[in-house]
Length: 104
Image (cartoon, rainbow, N blue to C red; front, side, top):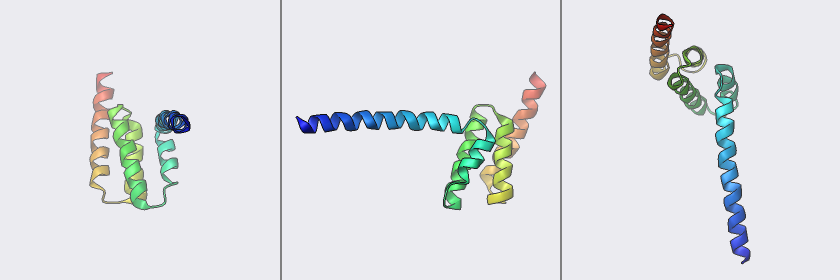
């Protein structure tokens, strides 16, 4: 019976942590400054780069092209001057931004 209670408590805590982490991710990725600020907390350059690339890709998906551009430029200026992924995101975000402005 005690193991049952411990298991239920574990499941509840686990679900709450998942919900909280999803909420934090959604909050953190609201703008480029927040993404860059959080990325600065990562120890390794590789982790920082991966996090920033994921943030830029999410901005592209959400059609927040200005934020994708800022993050991609940050990557190219501060972390990896030759990041092909950042260059690709930057090029596509600028193109999509022009198309978006043209359509409005």
